[in-house]
Image (cartoon, rainbow, N blue to C red):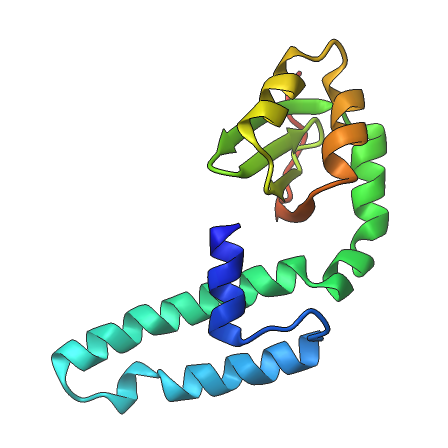
Length: 149
């Protein structure tokens, strides 16, 4: 969640910001912080770091944008309905679930207590559908090939 808030602050994103505005803001920030604009070594290094942060933030914000989620909803629904959970990892407040088809989704704001309940559930997929998939902000992290069960 901290990363999301940092990125939203960097781009000055409001809840109703669409992809077009996000792209315009991205282009303006990249122009402003392009390393070639800074001849000094220290300033250029800072600009390179800032540029990488801007690029990472843009790709991340696009991946969680409502338009992106809507465009990928059919695929997400298929994956979560037809594939079981192959593996999951929890770091901070981010839960990464890898499904049997190899696709990985990240869920944000998931507490350790919720992950413990998921790990101890008789039917982890059913628990995840009821308590995680419908309640937390998510994005597709990786699209992969079949995972051996």
